[in-house]
Image 1 (cartoon, rainbow, N blue to C red):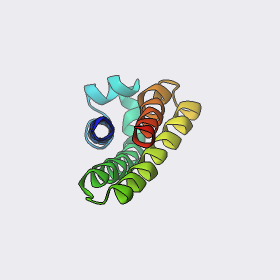
Image 2: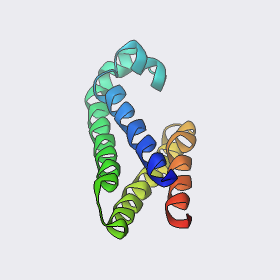
Image 3: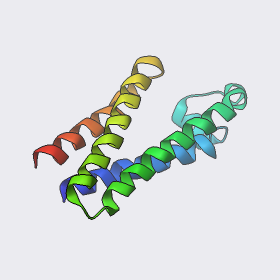
Image 4: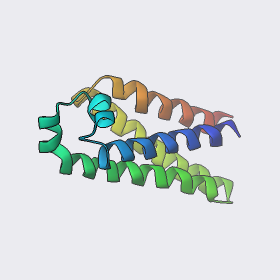
Length: 118
């Protein structure tokens, strides 16, 4: 049950990131969240919307894993999407901002451990 709660929370986090990147990128909330100037946000808006869409796919996969009735298949789906979140978080942390490691990668890794060892 704790694994499912953590998966849902990570899914919700990625829905939030989707909203920030797709709809609020050049608005005050998006500018603050990503530390961008309005000028930079205007230039990168389409790229951010693409990133937001990918975050939506991650969220959809995590939510899908919660809806599957077969526990082994549900765990496999969750493992795949949590692994994707982890890799994306590490890559983002190394290339964009170190805080991404703590926001995305660490929670995904901890959730993977809970899903597989509880």
